Image (cartoon, rainbow, N blue to C red):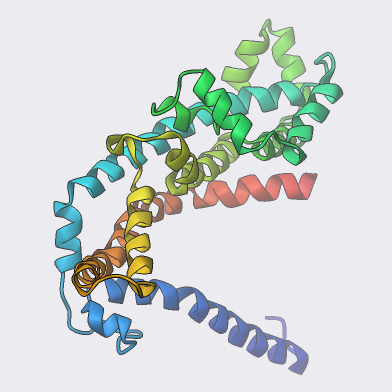
Amino acid sequence: MIRQTRTDRIFDIVNYIFMSFVLILVLYPLIYIVSASISDPKLVNTGKMWLYPMGITFEGFKKVFKDPDIWTGYINTIFYTVFGTLISLAITLPCAYALSNKKLPGRKILTALFMFTMFFGGGLIPLYLLVKNLHMLNTIWAVLLPSAASIWNIIITKTYFETTIPAGLEEAAEIDGCNTFMKFFKIILPLSAPIIAVMALFYGVGRWNSYFNEMIFLKDRSKFPLQIFLREILIINQMVSSSHTITAEELKSLAEQSRIADIIKYAIMIVSTLPIICVYPFLQKYFVKGIMIGSIKG
């Protein structure tokens, strides 16, 4: 074994202290949310519950599982995430592969045009008018198509193809009679599991947390994702905290709504993040590998 010097031991001690501090910063909000989800909302709001559960109650989870709006939002969010991620991958991977092909005519010009859209855009109003003119308002396509591809993700995937897939492998495939489609589906994709997992995670998390486009383009509550219903709960709390000019009866009604919102707010946070937490461990190794390969070789 290599003998540690005094400087090495000091470094290890400082490193352990720093990492312990970071661990506390990360774990405390998670523990607090879990504890608050099963604690009496009065104790949570007054600050008496700050770490461990107090006045344990599962009323929040019961209301979450009984609320049809929340179940509707949950199902819609799963649908948007799964199909939106598949559509995004179906656009990102072929596009990135095409831009990584040095034989593509006008490759540099196309790449520059793609990157131009990262810095300059038309804004929200032109996007809304475009969706309206395409007759996609209040449809699932208004959620899935406008944000189907990210130029940043395309550039990352393009870099991965350029730095990871050997050019000689594609040349050998061409000699064996493979056309572009055969190369892409039989050679490139099987060798690109890390970057596919990374892109699926990026798009999946983005879809799962998305609510702004849905709030703009959707009017039918049966199509709302879970995040919009969670936003409504948070707005109820803000209305109560800022209510100074309403009647006593209205205040009492809002206070009751706030109490219910407090009960289910933290429960929804847990329920809404569970799928991402469950999926991430299976993609973690690909996530780390896919990110690091491009950075090391790039």
